Figure 1 (cartoon, one colour):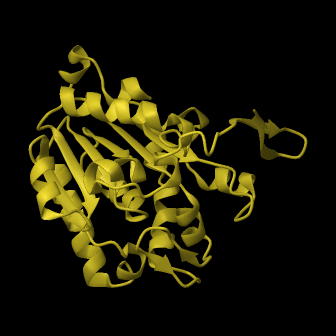
Figure 2 (cartoon, one colour; figure 1 turned 180 degrees about the vertical axis):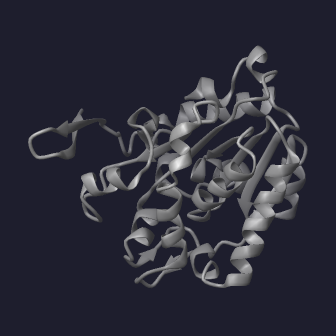
Length: 260
């Protein structure tokens, strides 16, 4: 995956390819299934059907993703058995299994490697990275980020509640679509909570010739200058197992198992 995010120089000259990585976490899963959420970040949802949850489902079921090998859309998923059966989750996603990965590939014990990836991306793509982040970054920090970022696009924190407002939703989509349209062969680094997944969907539809990556909270230390998750200060706190997806031909069910 790191090679896809930070391709070699000859590949950078090929403007006819792109990439998207959308990761589904607890918050997104709960929104899709109408479960109440009180996030560690400043957003929440009281429960019940949400417009953002519906749009997340719609993005998952977008059939065009299956036929774009030149600009593949990867999904980071996990076994959300406390929210929905794994088979139900997998059959919601209109994408070939080879484009499925683990939602935690950037965090926990992988976080030190992710920080190295961030540094290499900043070094190799200076002024070619578009940051899509929340409004919580200080003006002083924004000045620092602008030294290497090509552009910084900000969204409010409480996305799920605001997404219920038609005017906000339309403006939010228009903003990411306009930004995606301005660039080609650029890296878009997203960290705007559950809005990320829908925004990447619309950006990819407008222009699949960029790389749209859901880095999530792994950007927090960089953009906020503070630790927001336990894994950022103790990477061994949560050690993720290896997940294996199997299809039971007799039961006609996808099943998941772990290898520690």
